[in-house]
Amino acid sequence: MKSRFFSSLMLITVLAALLHLSGMQSQNVWAQDKPTPTYKYCHLCDQMVAQAVVRVLLFWMDGCPHCHEVIDNVLPPLRQQYGRQLEIRMIEISTKEDIDRLYEIGAGYGLKPEQIGVPFMIIGDQVLIGSRQIPDELPGLIERYLKLGGVDYPQLPQLASFSSAAQQSPTQTTPQPATVAPTALAIGQPQAIEPEQPVRSAPKSSGFTLAIIILVGMVLVLLYGIVAIAMNKAIVISERFDRYAFPILSLLGLAVALYLSYVETQEVPAICGPVGDCNAVQQSQYAKLFGLLPVGVLGAVGYIAILFVWFWSRYRNDWLAQKSPLALFVMTLFGLLFSIYLTYLEPFVIKAVCAWCLTSAVIMSLLYFLSIYPLVKQWQTEFESEGSEFEIKES
Image 1 (cartoon, rainbow, N blue to C red):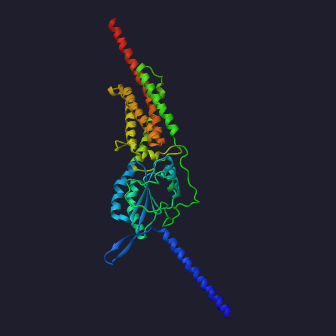
Image 2: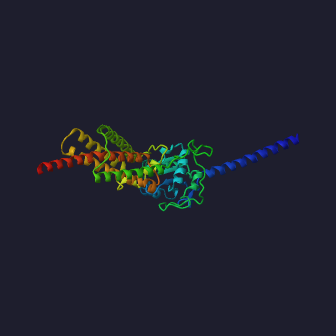
Image 3: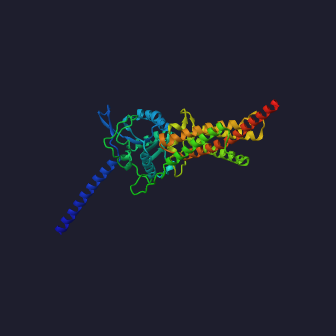
């Protein structure tokens, strides 16, 4: 009887010890999910009081106007308001490999490549994209996580591989945590990244080769036009073909320009397809002329003007209709030169290619090609008419 009593007592003691150890372990795990709190001095209670800390990741790209809008105008007031309770780690996207890693991170949150762009912010289990969503939702999320005791950086294995991970962005003034490796998410949701979750691959083709081929083709078309005008001789294009090809191409170009205008003005991700990275191009500083006018809007205005002059020449017989071949040539020449400039920027300066922009460049090149023969034909007719009048006067 005594042996059974002592055996039961020992079993209860062992179980109590195990429960105590498991409780301590669970407390340690919970502590890892929370960032190390900051402290401020309480003058009333004469002691240090812990403060919750919210840590945020921001992916940005140099030359992106939306990124600089967030960095220069949205974050400073929040930093001033929350002080040491808000820490923002900024990761610059500067290489193609960085873009691929950002796609991987976005895929872990259930985002498709065409939905991902910069500025790209992660706070807790939430993803904010763009210079509209971030200022609209970030303040409320900061308050929410502060009430929950703070939130640490998400655990993203890709962070250590970013080219700017080892250095701090000069625009960041918030103190950083001592360790680079972030801890786990404070609030686990199905959208959080899990190691076993398959990662969607980034676009397979950068489109650089295609952009360079199109660039060379545009230069050749430009040179052909110069030679044709100088020699007053061009490739003959039938009236029937020009009657349908010119307006159809112009309408297609207008549709592309209107879509790009929508993307640029509404700050929504562009649907790029398997070639290039349209969003990187649209978010670069070259997406706006003089930093004000979106290039897509300028293109739409150009295509509308081209269509107007073409239709005017078909249904009117006044001075503008007579000068329409020259007007169409000049407008398409300007469009071609501007397209050459933009196409050069994509692979050599921006380091990203926009399939929509390349489509517009090809359309403008074809319109320029079609505008050459009507102008040369009109000049030939005028020269022949002037020659006939001269012969009549001589006789």
